[in-house]
Image 1 (cartoon, helix red, strand yellow):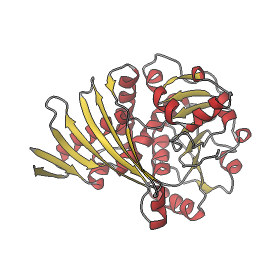
Image 2 (tube, helix red, strand yellow):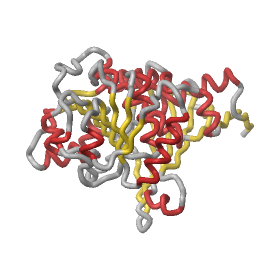
Image 3 (cartoon, helix red, strand yellow):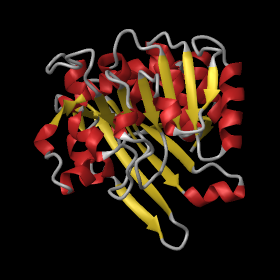
Image 4 (tube, helix red, strand yellow):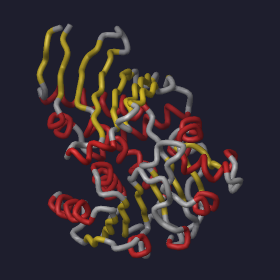
Length: 330
């Protein structure tokens, strides 16, 4: 059995953000149409270290794509100078069940999460959006900006992070990447400064309390909430969620895992019925997206394995064409 092994560099060379956005959009449509099998993710908490390892399989029937991701989230790694997230993805031939490839999933995870926000921003943000605020200057914050800039002509970026050095490094890194990322960056001293003119806000933190106040939002803003992935975490104020048009990646997953929804529901500020729908339904034209220039739209994503499988499939096809990676015989 031959297995293609792709490094993080191979993954980066094999796909663009625009291609990842398209792959994730198609995966979302299949998920919402019932054309995907996504078993519940298996979570293995590592007590004493504050970490967790997740096992996430999926199958996309229309794309005939199958695979699984193993991802570990260890927030304590930052103190050791290590990434918070490590991951790998296995791609399986859906016709034979034979594993075709194994690839680094750390960048892929950031890429597909950014791509999710790219899909949502394209469908929900105002067409004239020009200013973005990034809250959380880590790896996820980088692909969030790449994705938003891929679907809107962003002219100005505000960055807010609890660590000023991380924010400065973020600005230095992202400026080097060139268009479509703009040259105009500012590091905000507060959430009110970051959000004052923001048309699109991306929250990419592990906060357990809101990272901004509802009153700080500009009318017509769009929010991508991708950082809070447990029932206890909360990035977006309950008041904001309650008054927003809420669209999710997976209704069942977000209601089970997303504190940004669970907390306002528990507080009686909204119900599950107030969720407008899934982003795949919006992408397929089954339900409308933004309905006015003034309304607040909120995309809540906890991540679903169809994103990983769809993007990994696109990466593998391109990698084979370019001869990337190495083939090993097992």
